[in-house]
Image 1: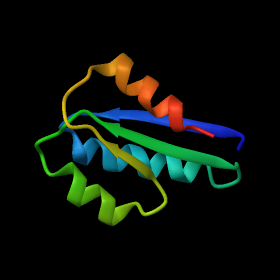
Image 2: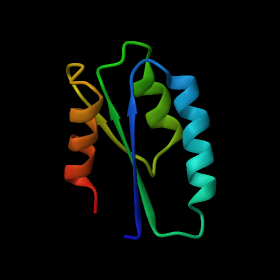
Image 3: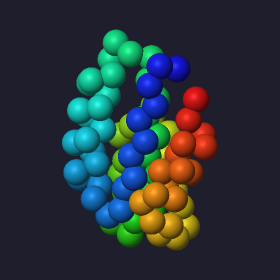
Length: 79
C-alpha cells in the first residue's frame, strides 16, 4: 500500500460523497486505500454511502469520539 487516506465524517454525507469521488479519481494510478471513520452521524450516511462506494472501508462508530480519536481509529486499520 502506497497511500492511506483517512476521512472523518459527521453528518455531511453529501459533502463526503463529493470528497470521495475526488479522492478516488486522484488515486486511480496509486495503490491506495480510503478509510472513512463516521462519528455516529444521524443523517443516513451509513446506508447512503455504503451503497455508493463498495471499495471504501467504512467504520461506523457508536458515539462521537471526536476528530483526533476517529483519525487514530482509522490509522489503526490502515495498511
